[in-house]
Image (tube, rainbow over all chains, first blue to last red; front, side, top):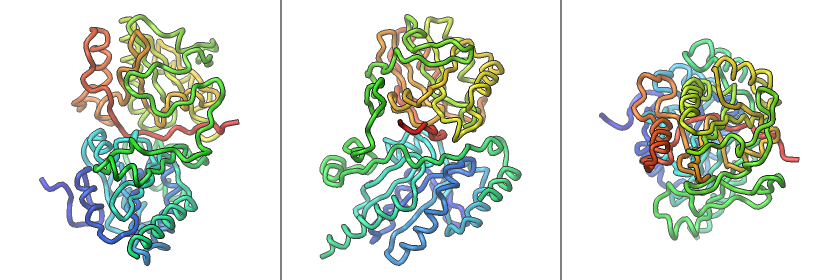
Length: 154
Length: 248
């Protein structure tokens, strides 16, 4: 069985498949990965900030990935929310056991939602949050990573 | 956003009608992973052992020992902090501790995952109470952020579930901070000597109890009572972030 569906608007990913997707985003100064779910109110509250950041930083090659932690048979409401929120598609829906997925993504993550990771240009995790993140925090972290990547190139 | 949630709730199954309450507080755990340390010693991106919490984010209420996450082998903190049980009595972890060990459960009323597992938590807790394991369930959520987590709702839930162990209010969320608990449900099992032997989830399937493959908590409790080592001492599962009360 493939570890990710390659077609459609919602790609099912297990932990290794998600990591490979992130590794494939070559040339980005920062990759933001936000884990959310339709039942998680704080996730939905912070979501517009992430969409706004994705748009504002697209020209700087920053990538923002949303990974829904809803169950695989809940694709319809997940897609409905993503469309209404203006998130770019395709997006991601996790699959597989919680424990394996969480440990593969980040061993320090308890599994609390929302959770957000930011990878730097060398694909190391540079920021990790459990709980809500506001847009200003995101922008500050991204500005720092962009400046760092720019300095590295000089 | 609210409208979209309503439509989501209407169109989806089992647990969406139990949606989490809003959390007006921003993240209570922000970790800035130091690039040099992480790069030098952690070739895998999946470890944050060399991470740090930004300064200014670590002040703790005085009666609690400042901790981050508890590690296996650590001693139960804040054992003498009094908390109000649903029966109105004040209890402490030290008072509920028994000879074979103590199970400390961070849970709540409102979270869909806490609700999915609460029946199993109550059943296991009741079962192992009779095997000399003390059990306590703690609600650390701020009812201002999660109205379903108020005291009267907790009383009702404990009664409905037939819990034979305390379900207490963590009145300033200090217990969650002391244990480093970040989500509900989150379990800490201590041995008779007070050392942490298991930390994590109930089992590997919140939604379908009859399809559970790994009974993490039951296995840990059985091993503890039998005096055997616990095969999987740390497990992970998705849950709701704890809605901490603001620190004074």
